[in-house]
Image (cartoon, rainbow, N blue to C red):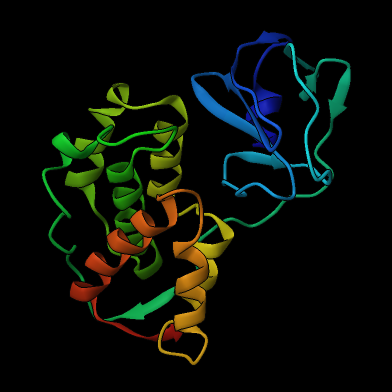
Length: 214
């Protein structure tokens, strides 16, 4: 996110969603969030230390720093949002979790359920290091069918970038903590966590990961 902010010219940027826990803006065709401590820490967001965000009227970029109204939000630290590395003997991808072209954008809300399933499936493959070129191409061809946030999160998943709950669960596979962390992931959002878990499990059933993260 820091590199993206620095690559874009100064000026106003559209606000695409306003809320007490999250504000999303569009920058260079991507959705960039500002999330409170109570919100889901999506990989395309700046994480604020506040428990809630103020009402936001406008947003702009100034020398690589996002401003919400008169509040500057410089990046103080960079968080690693990559999936953990999982050992596997698999070299070919799992079957897609459905008709990819029909799945993209199917469901309600800012992140439709089937998009979340695809995100989980894609991110699990990144964790085990197995390419999914055909599915990637099919997803990219349909990104205009879904919300800007969901399209950005699908792109994040194709780069192995995930929410913390997903990364912690993957890192705990075949350990005593796996079940508890699966429950924590499933509780994210209205249905997002369950979708991520469904997609990842569909992939891992065929990828045969060898225990916990390396």
